[in-house]
Length: 260
Ligand code: PGA
Image (cartoon, rainbow, N blue to C red; front, side, top):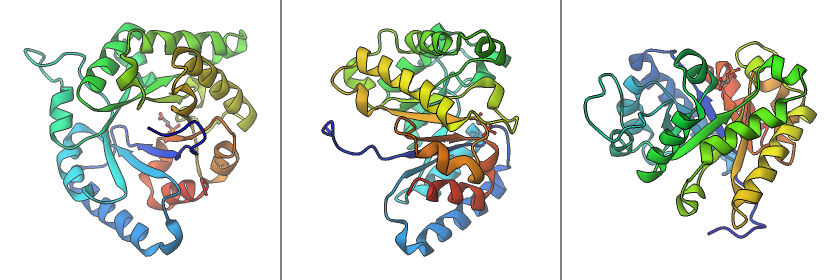
C-alpha cells in the first residue's frame, strides 16, 4: 500500500469512443510503442492507457502486453453472465488481460439511459473481477449555470460508489467530465477543473479516510496539447480522460509530456 505522501502517478487515459478500425489500431499501437521506446527520458512520469472498443481489445491487449501502455474497455455489463445479448462481461474483459473499464460516461448516461444505480452495479462488477473502474461524473451546462455543478457531481459520485467494498475501492479512478466540455472544444478553465476535482477529492477522503487522498481524479473534456499542462498542474487533477486528442499519437504524447 502506498503511504499518504507517495506522489500520485498521473493517469493519461485515451477514450477512443467508436473510432478507428481494429486493423488500423494495431499499426497505430505499434507506432506509439516505437515512439515511447525512442523517448529515452520518458521515465515513468505517468501511466498511459487506451480505452478502446470491444472489438479492439483482444488484439491490442496482446500487442501491449509487457509495454508501458495499458488497454482498457469503455463499458461493461452490470451482469455476471447469461442471456444478455450484445453485452460484454467483466470476467470476459479480465480474461483478455484488460485492467481498466470506463463506467458511467456521459454518452452512456445520455444515449443508453444509464442512471447512478446502473453505474454503481457496473463499478461493483468491475471491482469484483479485479478491474479498475474509471467512474465518470459531470454536470450539464444548465446545471452549472444554475450553480448546481458541485451538488450534481457529488450526487453522481455518491450514487456510483454506494456500497463499494472499501478494500477493492482503493484502486478506483474518478473522472470529472463536464458534459458541456466533451467533444465541444470548450474546456473548463484550470481553476474550475481544480475546484470540481477538489470537491470530488473531499468526498473521497470523507468516504474513504484511509485512502481517499490517493484515489486518482482525472479531468476530461476537450483536453488537448494546448491546455493540458495548465490543467494537469492543478493539485487535484491527477491525469486526463482524453477523447478526440487520444486518436492522434502526437497529441497523446504531447499531453503525456505535460505531466512531467
Ligand atoms: P473529448 O472527450 O476529449 O473529445 O472532449 C472526452 C471524453 O468524452 O472522455
